Length: 274
Image: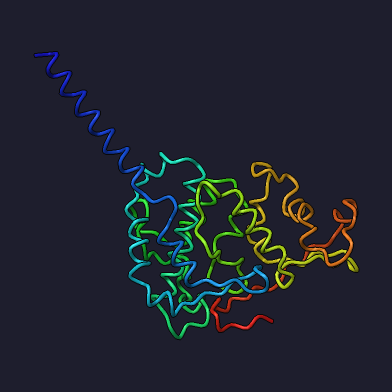
């Protein structure tokens, strides 16, 4: 009798493990649905350093977007925790970008800026309008309490997109765990190569960079391999930003850092860059 009970319990335990394993492997880590939507409705401009979004096209494909968002919402925290770090971060970056597109579509057309969705009592980012990891969430929760809290990775600020012209480009392909490091490096390259958003002026020895580096400057720290902060990050990538000869490190360490005004216009195909 004892042996039979033990055998039954073992079988049940194996069944539970197999169900958990199936749940962990059933998610499409290529993010194929999202990738297809991005390729169809996101276009690179200015030799690939920025992008525009065809929200009319996304609106026509909203059912496909909803199916992808549903697949994200179906993932439990337990399942997510079982994935490698790169897959978890790619999942959350894609979730942020896809749910941002959904937020825009919820108020489209007639929208000139994502900030038009908010009011004096609630910003668009603090609105809870989607389910992720078993709870109703806002974009603020996803970015600040998950992505930034769980990962010491400042490059994410070049990957998450706030549907605005001032943002780093929304990539025209999904982030994946297998390619994440190279994709994040490419996102940094795109953004810092955009002289309308980030530049170094040798005449005045001054960086003029996106306000992103002001708002989230604390993310460049010792834990993220930048004990020298934002300046160390900018110095490391000076080759992408300098419009003349790259100065020596001593000169760069004395450079002024000015944060530029942010352009909150919706990143639509109709927008004309200055």
